[in-house]
Image (tube, rainbow over all chains, first blue to last red; front, side, top):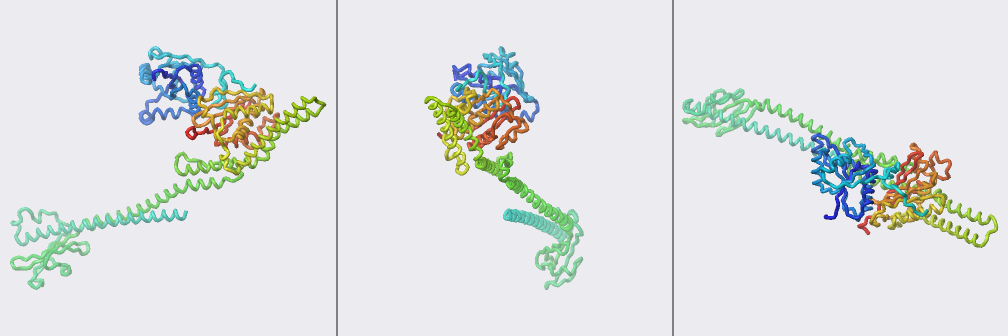
Length: 173
Length: 452
């Protein structure tokens, strides 16, 4: 486990947000990584939901079939470098919570995406990019900036944004 | 169904008999208890009366008749007998009781609502029979009440059992009848209909699911058979056109040997292409009759995509295909699909050539990726798109969208491709925005690597 970096990448559970993961993974091929795709989530203060609904339930609702397929594709694409990949929810904006979370989850690096607008249709989901930027000194974890290509393919199919990312690899021309 | 009803009614009968016997048992045991309890109380009073009568009040120190609660219509009687058992003298005694009384011991009996407890005494050389009678208030009032209560409860219970059984029967039969109704609606003209699969993973959902899978297979075979002639003409047309074109061109004027060689070579290539297509079509036709999985072998999907692209390029050299293989998995085993290479190639080349045909830049973008249980092929164009209201018809053979008047075609390629993908247990879905472009997504199940 010594040379495995645990990297937290903000996500909004859209296929498009997996481009951050792809850009990050394509730039780093030297070291084995474990990925944590995380986003902020207000679990609310209703006692029934606190008792009865687990993190897995929330995640199951947030992750679309295409998102999961995208994650599986990333896993099979980077099988040699990717040790593991899982999704997580940060349930508070509190700096103390963040520090403890990072201590507990043994995250060593945070990816801070640039040029990505967080867009989730879910009411309870919030963007953690700014939050992480704010508290990064407090947390004491190394950050890796990843700037997305500006060019955005306006997808017709939700998987469009996952492929056809940059300079086309042209074949048989 | 009749058998079902028989079981149900016998079940109801068993439950009713059980309830009734339960009620009878309760009634019997309560009555029994009421009798024996009341006789005990009468005996106590009789003994107290005897003590009082024979020894006087002062002897009974602890107990006295006056301390014991008076029963309803309680009466004592005493009969003096001679040695032969004849009545010498009686007080408060009804002669009608005489035959019920045991003349040498104790006897408990009941006439109407009145209960009697008697005993024979031999006192100071005289024979006595002393008795106490009373009405059992519990028996006359409470037991009647209990009886009525039990009868009502029995009726309600029977009603409840019948209603619940019928409801349960309906809830059992209802989904089956619905299934039957849905299956009856499906005929050769609407094979696209599917049964609704319930959310629960019960037996019926599995049945509906199995039915649906069977319908998919039938529909695919049926459509393939139905459209075979049109498919064949459609597929054979392109190479034939190129053969005729090249031949015409070669014959149009005097050529030198190299030019003729070149033309004949081209014609031979096109004829070879034709032959490949014929064999693919024959395979397609055969799949309707045979178990289509028999001919399937593990094939690499990236190879098939590259071959399909070559085919498309050969048909029209203005077509451009840009392939994104950046998501190819590290492990190439994930790209293996169980299928027939010529058929898959036919399907993919049809979709790709459509993508090229209907876009102004004649460019199709093809991408490939592997997820856990299959491969995903995305074929995208920036072409004219499909009107949203026509999306539901695009898989119908011979259907052409309203904006395709300027493009040649027969409306056969996409249904054919979809049928081929379905044969491979895959899915083909189309997403499109009018004027912006179309994306075709093909998902095929990959071979389970544990089986290799």
